[in-house]
Structures are given as C-alpha cells and as structure tokens.
Length: 256
Image (tube, one colour):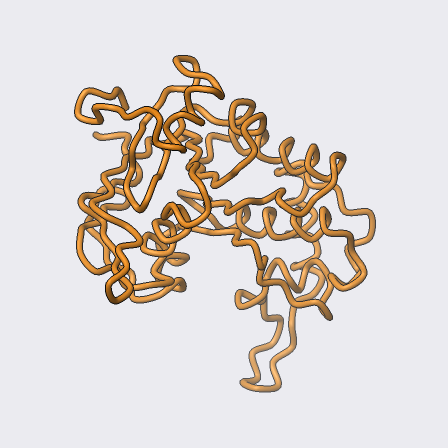
C-alpha cells in the first residue's frame, strides 16, 4: 500500500489571463512535513486553495488518501480529513476556546432543533485533551478569543486543526505576525505534530523555521514548482537561488 497521502498532477489555476499556478506536480507522504516557499505571488497559497476546495482549479488532478478528489468546497476537504490554518485564522472573537475548537462541530446534550442545548462539559474536556495532545498552553479556556494574544489565537487555530485533521494539516504562514516567544510556542506545537505522525504542509518565508521543522522544501516561482529539495541536501543560499531564479532544477531527476 502506498504511503503517499496527497498527490497533485498538472494542477493549474488561471484568473483570466493571469496564470497563478501552472502544472504543479506534488507528492506528500504519510507523516512527512513539507515546506512550500517562494516570493509573494509565487503561487503558494493558490496551490493550497486548490487542494482544500477554497477555489475551483482550472485543470489538473488531485489524489488524497488513495483516491482522486475534487472537493466542491472547504467543508468537503475537512470531512475527508484535511484541516487548514490560514492567516485569518477563522476564529470567533466573542467565543471562548472550547466554543472555537468545536465551531461548526458542537457537541449536543439535548437535540431540540434550533433550541438544542450544547454539551459544554464534554466540549471543555475534549478541548483540554486536544491542547494536551498538541502541547498547546492556554491559561484560561474561558477567555474569549478577543482577549488573547496573537500567539494564543494562533495556537487555538492550530489545536483545532490538529484535533479534527485525521490525515493532513496545512499551515499558511502560522508565525508571520508573532513575536519571538509566541513563534517558539507555535514551532514546538509543529514538532509535537511531527512526533505524533501527523502529515503537514507549511507555507513559510522564515528560512530558519523551515530548516528546523520540515523534511523537504518545495519552491514556487511565478506559479510553477521550480525545486524539490531534501532539507539535508540543501541550505538557505541554495533555496534563495531557486526563489530568485538564479538557479533551476531538473525536477524529473529530483528525489521525492
């Protein structure tokens, strides 16, 4: 049985005359952590949006967990086992941590239609277990998201993704707006996910972070994948050369 959890073939997205993504061939193995790098507008986020059903692809194919998929929307991707943490986090500011973790997946104590009663105790217990499993530290689960720091918000979003992602987690610049200590906390969570055998795609501009956290680096340039690099066989200068176009790679010969 193949250990490839995600594969794309010729994945392409056009916005009118703009070719934002062109013929992206990609593979991710079970338990592997892969970074996607490239300049702004290189196609990184566009690639992820096609995988998760946020946008409809122009052409190409996607296989997930051994079958070809074409998700009509993000909800279908979530149901298949893919959770994404985008830069806007998609958290409800006026709800507490358990309510955000189970947003759209609430546990019901009594099902009375529009007047159903939530099982808040079960949601809190499940939240505590999820935070422990992902090594997320939130001092007061009853605090609303509005009163939390940027790092705590990010950790809640990651914990939610890890709780429900049965097969793949995607993170888009998870530490871009965080300070040093908060960045370290998020990175520790990513390491815990690796220890737990979770598959991960990480979009990041942070070279140090990428080399600390992932197994492999994919570089996008002008909508195309231009490099597929094993972390131990490359360095920061090499990656920058691919990002800027100073260097190119024979992808047919590149090891996955």
